Length: 53
Image (tube, rainbow, N blue to C red; front, side):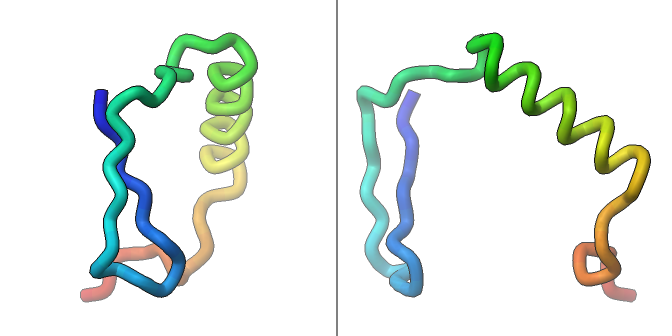
């Protein structure tokens, strides 16, 4: 799995990391992801993230 990293403020420079560890099944990351989903479901996202019409 390749991962792209973009330096802050420099969208024209992208670094691709091919040997990045996959953390998607790590218990700590799964727990944090579930907590984040529950928080967003309860509180919602700020208006700045809403779709503009």
